[in-house]
Amino acid sequence: MYYVEEVQQYLHVILYQILIGPWSSPKCISNEALCTHLVCKCINKFDSAQVNLSDGIHRFGRQGNIKCLCGLVGSPAQGILEPSKNDDASFVHLSSVISLPTASHGLTDEQKEFQKVAFDFAANEMAPHMAEWDQKEIFPVDTMRRAAQLGFGGIYVQPDVGGSGLSRLDTSVIFEALSTGCVSTTAYISIHNMCAWMIDTFGNAEQRERFCPDLCLMEKFASYCLTEPGSGSDAASLATSAVLKGDHYVLNGSKAFISGGGDTDVYVVMCRTGGKGPKGISCVVVEKGTPGLSFGKKERKMGWNSQPTRAVIFEDCAVPVANLLGLEGQGFNIAMRGLNGGRINIASCSLGAAHASVQLARDHLLVRKQFGETLSNNQFLQFKLAEMATQLVASRLLVREAAAALQDDRADAAALCAMAKLFATDQCFDICNQALQMHGGYGYLKDYAVQQFVRDIRVHQILEGTNEVMRMIVSRNLLSEI
Image (cartoon, rainbow, N blue to C red; front, top):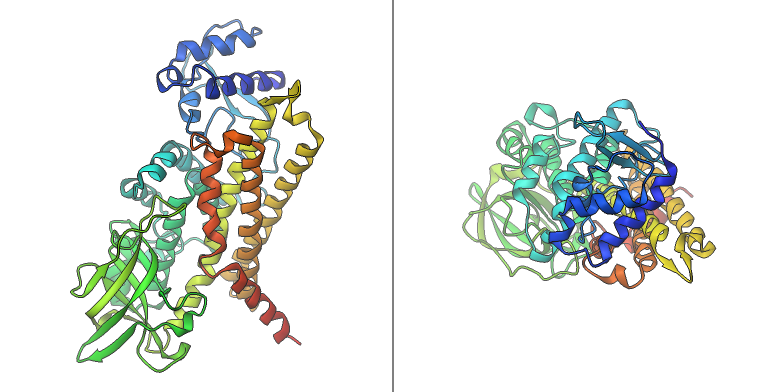
């Protein structure tokens, strides 16, 4: 390995020129000869005139994909030039230019392996397509099924029904890493995992065997159906009814803002089988194709565009009693148990967006010149970057603490999950927004990934319980101890 610190600045400059300069057309971006010439012109201490940069340039591109020559936050902490896998040692590639605390700090060797697999998948299978999925509103089924082959379809589902059987902390680590490649897609995967876990945990043996294997393989996809047009934060007031008639429940009502709605196969639905309030709510599994099940129009959204969102409508929809999860009246408890984990998951997705945005901002400051010097020499921006890194690490620590508490079923788990969701989603949105600001006008262009991270994680402060509701949960927990 060659440790060549002085090369880093030159590479950043050249990459930036390629990104925004006259060579930025797709044709030129793939022109390895041009890229090689530019880099070798600046790095004349290498005897070889051949530098294998095509892979990195392709991944960087004008779409701002985050797996680039600069690597990912959480990779080894030093700038390293390594021989590539090519037997010709004259070919080299930059594997990392990192100075942030790594995302793997404090993890076991096994967790670091999970993390590496997820980072690699995000870089190779998600990041190159992130902008296209967003712009064309593509639900990337094939990519998610490849993720499921790595065990990401049922991360904390038990192994006897096809799950990976990992912990909540393992899950957080994986979702943070995947989100560096595409927040929107990872967020859907997290919702799918929550649904699979609910069936695994509260379903009987027959239900677990019937639903979980296909969900873990992502041969079938799942949606979580709690929110209604008239009941958002006040979830216990939901009105979708389920009337028992013979061996079926007949459902009437509608659900709003359902991720995957219309494209997914399994709907975990909270419905009212009894009187008012949370004790009258039950949970049933409704399969796509059931008569009386239909969907609203596909919503047009600010972000999260790689997953469809629709209303889910029930009109005399007859669902077998065999599809009831748990007992009648347990539905609200099942929903809240699912959401405790969902809050950790969505906070972890926010970490991934912030993780990537800090790196993008850092790289931009190193190459963008104003007033005769790079922005990295501006003390105000230095301090802002330091604050962003501190916010990221603090958020990560709280999320991982909450994940461990949930795994151990601690008494403070629900409050910690609310704290983590509140703190991490607020802080990480601020990080991404500040990263966009540091990019100036470029940050507002869809050619740059930072704007998509901002758009995709804004909704994290709303869903899985708004951050105002998170404050209610935490304050009630504190006051109940008096």
